[in-house]
Each structure stands twice: as C-alpha cells, then as structure tokens.
Image (cartoon, rainbow, N blue to C red; front, side, top):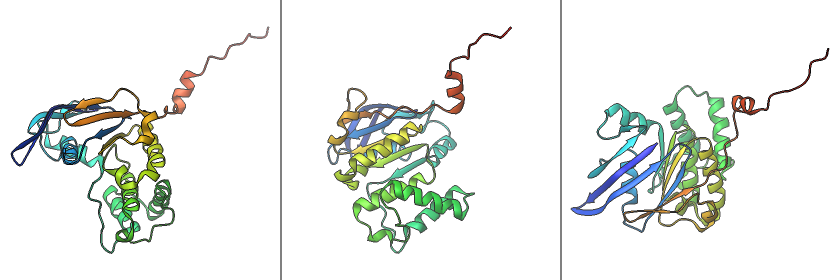
Amino acid sequence: MIEAFRVGAVSRGRTLWEGVDLAAGTGELWVVAGPPSSGKTLLLHILRGERRPDSGDVVVDGESLYRGSPEHNRRFRALSGVVPELLPAEPGKTLEEMFLLSALALGGVTDEERRARMGDLLSLVGLTGAENVVVSSLSVSERARAALAVELFRSPRVLFLDMFLAHAGREWADRMGALLRALAREEKTILMMERRFPDEWQAQIASSSLSAGPFTLYRVAAPPRAPKEKERQSQAPPVSGTAEG
C-alpha cells in the first residue's frame, strides 16, 4: 500500500500544490491526470521516495519513506520499476544489451533464461524480434514500450509510468491497457502520470474519479485474479455420497 497524506510541493519558490492524498493498494492501477507543468513528474518522484515532499508524507506498508529508516526507502525503490518521461536513448546500445543490464542487476539469471524472458516481454509490447535493434533508432512509441519491457524483466512490485501512454500512442492504448490491467491482477501496484485519462479506458474506470490539487485520480479496474491451486481446492464443494453396506 502506497499512501500520500496531505502532500505538497514547492518549486522555484512557488507552491505547485498541497494537500494531495492518494492510497494505492496492492493490485491496483491508478492514473494521475494533470495539465502540463502541474508537477506530475515531481509527484512521481515524491511517491517513489526520491524527493522529500515540502509538506505531508508518503507511507509504504505502514512506514514513512522519509521519516522511517533509510533502508526502507532503499528497499522500496529497489523493488520499484520506472519508465520516465524522458526516455533513454542509450546511444549504440541494443535492446538485448539493455536487458542484459537488467539481468545483471537482478542476479542469478542464466543466458538462456534471459533470452527467453526477453523474447516474451518484447512480444507483449509489440516488439517481437527486436532484440538486436539499436535503442536510439527506435521511434518514441517503440522506445516507451521497450522501456516498459526492460523494467518488467526484474518483476518489480510497483511500477511508476510517466507519460507512458502519451509516448506509446493512441493506437497502443487498448493493448497496453490490457497488459497493465493483467499486471495489476498479478498484484503489482501501478501508478501512471498522464495529461489526460485515455478515452479508450473510460469503460474500465473502477470508481468515481477523485480530485487532488491540480490532479484528477482514476482507479482502473483489473480483471479478476484467477484463484491459485490451494484456493481452488479450498473453494471446491465437499464430496458427498453414501457408503455401501
């Protein structure tokens, strides 16, 4: 659970916003929509534990990211993935090299496992067979989707996406929406910063939108999670019958 309590931010001596509240639980997908220059990226940094708010606090799993232990903050960031607004160009590097860096950071991944997972993830974002493509040669949409795939390689517990849909393009809104909702069903928490809520997702809004400072918060419904084997067994009706005699 990520909770923001009365969070405020000041930039260049000007108060951008204050009193922002947010509670994003495990398995929830939230879109924070706000106009240009409203401080969406700054809010992302605050929620991720990278920039202390000028007022209020951010609490993750019951402990403050800023008033708690530094180790709690480091651990949360290590378990989080982020696709930034300024997408990496990585001159000269191929997508495979980007995945290799993620594999090294994760540790304990064989070359065979890395290649298989890389292929699966690139397929999910519409980049099948692009392993040897140089990142800087990709379009903005392709780079955004590739950046998401690279972050997913580490199986982060929390995903922060800054202007991801704006970069991916409207033609990818439905497919990326389905992917992100599926990730939420797998108990990932996903926070997205966008200028507007996508029209293509209107039917997926889970509850009434909320206002927080200059932002409008939308919770997107995730598909029901399939029960695990133990859950299926516990939910199965008892077998009844009569003994022969």
